[in-house]
Image (tube, rainbow, N blue to C red; front, side):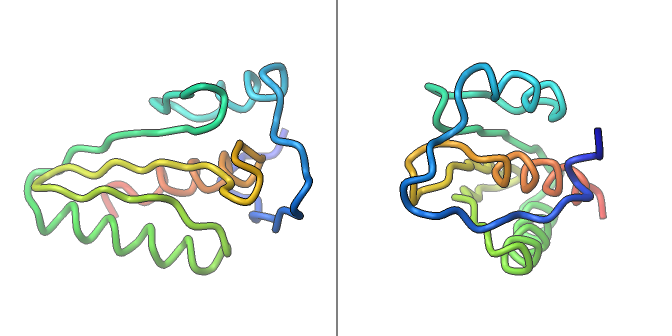
Amino acid sequence: MEELSKKKCEPCEKGTPPLTREELQPLMQQISGWELIDDKTIEKSYSFKDFAMALAFVNRVGEVAEKEGHHPDIYLGWGKVKISLMTHKIKGLTKSDFILAAKCDTLVGL
């Protein structure tokens, strides 16, 4: 199975069904530290030593999100960032959410 962070997010068409619980489980095993919420959202909190490092991470995530055409909800505070992913068009999760989650994890410490 190809590493999620190496894949490209794909646009979702309205009416596409969200991933089922059975489809979510193997993808959850490929991303570390992410929490599945109501089978509709995945979230992860990151800690940084100060606000500047947290902001730099948010900016890197923003650049990747723009390239991928898939945008997370991002919450920024002093030394902390929370990323929340869901495909809003279908009010659920697609493989692109997991791809972007994996890409976010690769940006920590850059």
